[in-house]
Length: 183
Image 1 (cartoon, rainbow, N blue to C red):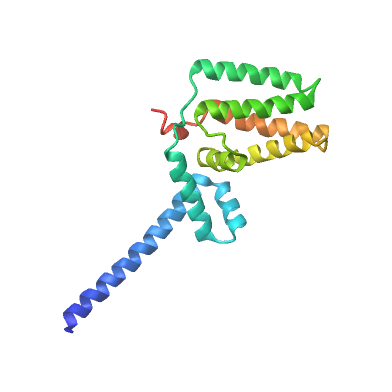
Image 2 (cartoon, one colour):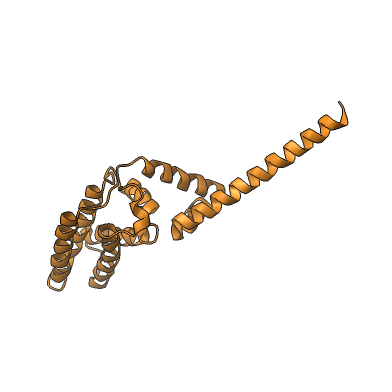
């Protein structure tokens, strides 16, 4: 082998290593920026950055294929009106209000185009476009489940309503960057 061929091989190998390092860093930065607190949660859950990033990338690819859309002005107005009624009802019937809020959140998600197949998939899907409030969905839903078993206090129900309110607001009036597929 001549020295020129060896030198070309070394340069190609270095270029490949540098490219791979750049790609991994770029991917990590992208996922951290896109998923925010959900990125940290995924790393904690999996115990491995590479596995977490693979999982989040998979979520991202899945959601990109879904027909998620913004609500029409009419739909948004109707859902907002329903939400105001549910919130007002909380004072006299906190248990019923939380149950209705859980149902309304699912209805909004379904109307927007999120599949309603199962709880874990819904959470994973919503985390892609709404990573800063997905934890609210987990909290509200957990309390709603505990309520069904008779294990939630009035304070728990209040926390559920607050969590659902933040998620609801984002689903009904999403930030512009989550409307990337709506146009």
